[in-house]
Each structure stands twice: as C-alpha cells, then as structure tokens.
Image (tube, rainbow, N blue to C red):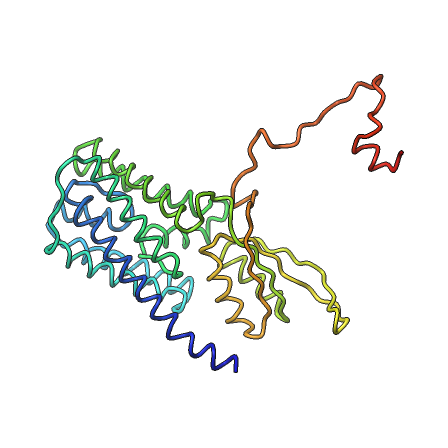
Length: 321
C-alpha cells in the first residue's frame, strides 16, 4: 500500500519541480532582461559573467550561461553523481532558454539604475528561492561554492559564494569602466540574498527544522548527512517500549530548504526508516544564528563575606533548605 502511494506521489512531485523551475526561470529571465543587463549591472554568478560577455561581444546571455555552466556540471557529475545534479541541469536549461526568449520579448527598463538594481534583486531572489525549494540550483556560483566546499572544509559555503561573487563584481567595474555599476550590483546581490533567506527560512534565519530519524542504517545515513548536506548529526541512545530492544535515534537540525535533501537521503538509503520532522523556533550555533553577546552567560564573582541567598538556585542545587 505504501509503495503504491509513493508511486502516485512521484509524478506529482515531478510536476511540482517542473512548475517551480519554469516559474523561477522566467522570473530570473525577467530580472536579467528587463532590469540588470540593460543597465550594465552584473550581480555575480554565471549570469553576471554572461552579461559582461554580452556587453562586449553581443552574444546571447542565456546561451552563454548554458555554455559556461557545462564545465561546472561536468565537475559536479564527477564529484556528486548524476542524480544529484540532474535537477540543476534541468533548471539551468530552462532558465537559459527563458533569458534568450525574453530578451526579444520584453521592453528593457533604462530609467533610474537604483530602481533597476532593487527590482532586479527582488525578482532574482524570488526566482532562486522557487528553484532552491525544489532542491535544485541554476548552476553557477552556488554550485561552484558547494563543490569547492568539499575540498576547503575550513570555509563555509556562504563565504565561498561571497568570494566568487565579489570577484565577478570587481571585474564588472573594469568591464563597464564604472565603480557605480559595481556598487549597483552589490545592492542587487544584497536584496536577492535577503529575499531568499526570508522566503526559505522566514524572517528569522535562526529558525529551522529538527529531524528525528530511526533506522537500521543509522551510521550510513549519518555519514551521508554530514558529507552531502553539511549538517551535524547527534546519535541518541533509545529503547523500544514494545520490543524492549536498545537502539539509536539520529537528531539533526537543518534549514527549511535542507529538509527535502535529508528526506531524499533517508528514503534512498532506507525506505523503511521512521522520520519525524518538527519546527525549531530558534536555533543558535554553528551554521545558524550566533548567540548575541548580551545573552551569553556572564561569570559573576560573589563577595565571600556576603551570605548566600537562601532562595538562590545555588542553594536549591545543593539541596539546602
């Protein structure tokens, strides 16, 4: 019965994936064709490089994006495997076609460059969030950062993306002979990243999901989460109330986008696994929000001549009246 249900759900999930890729691709194309490219704004990524190539040579932005992504996808196939990258390939092909299609169909906006940078970032943020929610990317910077992160563990993926995008923005200042264009690109990147965080994680990046996984293949699943999702896993000892057998439960805190990745890994490695997904109202620590300085515990030294308060926690812990 469960197998039949999964088979019925699979076409529905594929249709959701395709719908998200198409919607996201056309929003991304609208951002590039209407706002950023006509105003010489190259906001990082492969699309930014393609925009600069278009400015210098006139070659189509979408076609160049696809061509430049080919070696990146070959590298990703080698590192991650075909199935892990297939969705990103599909999303990239659709977005590249949409960019070239809208280039001739949309009237470019060539007014206030600040408005172009802001609205370009808004559309791009919504577009990428739609694609990310379905466990794919449009290639480029995020995929490069993920691949580099496998070999440079001392750098976070966010910092690697910032380095790559920063380099492209710096190059755009030289290509367009304008510092202002580079600064507008920074604004677009900022608006885009903030909107992605808001859509995917809510208004507070400290929120997320907490997963409890019960499986006979805990070790394999834990290693897959550590390497493929780049999240920590805690092993909790457990005992079944019915069977009386000792076991273990995997505990993992992730961002909302990463839930789908973890679920796919668990189902792939153990279709019979028991998985619980719950909301985490606040997550602080490595990979999430850092604990504010004013909320960190402060060491208080008491005057030895001052008698302890009879109602203090210290006395309760010691068992005193």
